[in-house]
Image (cartoon, rainbow, N blue to C red):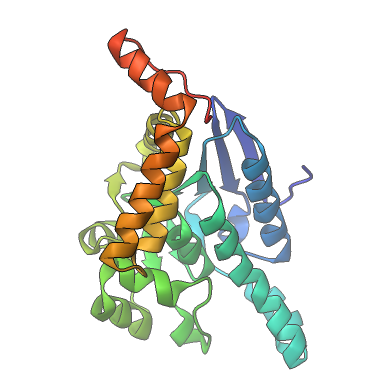
Length: 263
């Protein structure tokens, strides 16, 4: 892949994508969207990859949209052109949520606008103690994208979501942990190793089970209890008829680590 704004590597079933425009705090431009979408497609089609880690270089995860590009193109566009441009944002969230692999955001620093939105669309979020989260749209005359209005209240509650979006206040890593926006805070130097350790734990589990957990959790907030019970039944039936179940059971009896194939 010909990536410009993001570095990308794979190791032991894990893909690691790192925003790499530290001179502009990893601000997102059209090229960045093209890069991340290429990575998501690569992860989707590579059967050896089970977890994707997203992080940033320097003191920011991402400071949000590149306002220079925004001012030079989007503000001068027609209404229809603006709508097409905004679909670039919305389609990124769709692609992340639809990815049958797990996405971990390892937030290393400032996460603003689209930066924090990408974190929200990930399955798991861990953060450096130096990280912070800001929805600055109201301060700039802008509005949220990337499914924030759907994802954020489900993580931290409607009242807290309203407060941080309406004020544009910066939320520290520890406060984000208290709110439930992230699941872990680690020392800055331990962020990558912690994310990789977490990814390795997930990658060692049965791929079918992992995929179903992501899929059903996403549907659960819009489902009734009966619908969730049906989803669980269907998921269990898929697992019961998989080779991986036999491998997991046999490995347990033989006191060894299972080797799952996702079949």
